[in-house]
Image (tube, rainbow, N blue to C red; front, side):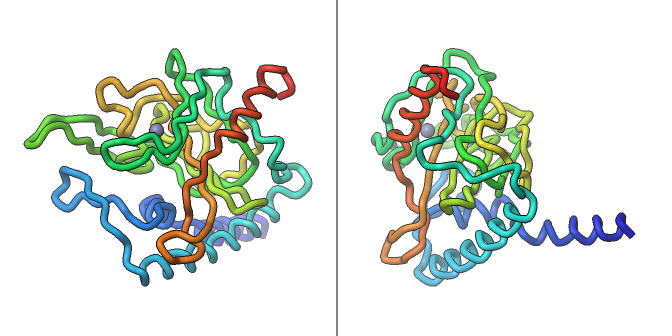
Length: 253
Ligand SMILES: [Zn+2]
């Protein structure tokens, strides 16, 4: 009887989550990356109907994840107050505010936190639900017509091995890219603020020569973007991350 019940619950759980490819598509804002001929990446604007349908699908998933978190977390995992984020690395590292720095493919809408050696533990800044993860990056940079291109699996070609965390308290998204193989969490896992997610690596587009040894950390909130309400837009998490780093240095966390 209990075995049957456990099986039914497990089957129901899988309906709460979508494939990581779908999750990446719902996560990207007004444009999405495509590889029309499997080589160069291009950014294609989503149509209005794609955007509106994507927001509706994401909202429905979020309602499910909130219920999922509430069912499983009970009193043992609580949502994280905004002034209690945990610094996302086990060491202080080198924190720069490089949000919106210009890059060849547009502004860099995330923070890069540089470490002196790979393998440093990446931690969840807040408690929440893992809504996408990918740990099978096998690509890298290869030379072909027109120069270097990258290829492979993982969370996405750009992220390499990575993790996407949903905060059921705020509805915010935390995204970690370029991790080493051996991610500690899988889609559907509940995590507590400060819990280990994986280790800093150089997978995805950080495998470009000279671009290693950092955690790419992006933070998104739903807002008004390209005239559609509810699209996820990148927010600079530097103030919260800097405050969390100061707490780490003081030994408060
Ligand atoms: Zn980056």
